[in-house]
Amino acid sequence: MPKSIIGAWRGFSLAKQADIQTPATVDTLLYFEGEPMEPEIDTFYVNDSEITGELLPTVARALNKKFTGKHKTKAFPHIVGLFASQAMGRDTVTQVATTSAYQHKIEIDKNVVELPFRTMIENDGYQQRKFTGVACTGFSLSGERGGFVEFEADLLGSGAESADATPRPARINESYLTYQDVKLTRGGTFNGSDVTGGDDLSAPLKSFKVEFKNNGKGVHLFGDPSGNMGSIRRGQKYEVSLELDFELEDASHRTALVAGTEYVVSLPMVGAVADGTARYTVELIFPRVVYREAKKGVDDGTLTVAAKFAVLSHPTHGGFIVRVINLFQNNYLG
Image 1: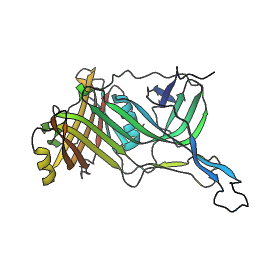
Image 2: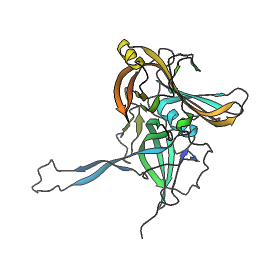
Image 3: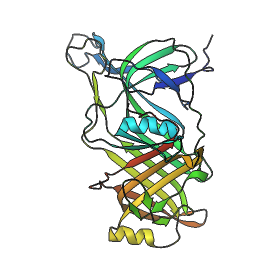
């Protein structure tokens, strides 16, 4: 009889692993969209380049493994904090005034070489497996009018897996963010904590997409008979992309493109009350960007502009900051 995915779930460890081989306790449940994941063969060898006296290969071997996949869901602060911190490398936590809420300031850590690892458990409705040494090599946030904010994390793991019987963990109770929660400002100043001033471009904003990639790559180590990756390391360069689609209201996008004007861009998504004056928040902050494209178009008879930005490194604040406010007080990298 065919097996059903009903009852499936996926969980991750809140704590990072001590190393790629040592699992951590899986204690947070995350909903997901799409297909289940499992390790796959990284290198499968057949001797089709050798002269063997036969017309077909005579030798085959599965040489090593890897674990790749995506975790896709509607966005809420906890999931953004969990994966953004893992991909970027630094999480600085402060309490929000006199509330019980906490702010996570997530930044790129230039000192990171080996990426932080988490442990993942997936029950696909048929079997339950534990995957050790899972890194996050990038993530994206996107949204459009009338919809939810979407989140997607790129995962790369060692390939190590084992049977598991961990009970399904609890889910942190945060609501999904929607287009109603999204604001956008261009310009103003950033002091390291808050963005002030600038032009509010929320009304003409049609859609947005932000992507971060650390270009992490796995390494198979000599002398390791497991065939699993023994290390997952960041790439030499990181990539951050910012794309915004607007209804065309004036020539400011084109003017700034030609002039090479530098801006602070802030994209706060502010949801329900967490506690007191603190609200569940995900804010994407770009301390220094310039237009690299501002192309006019037409959508249903309305002029539009598709804007793409070059995200530059600020000498004091870096190039990209993710600020998360929720009731989760532990450092996501603790």
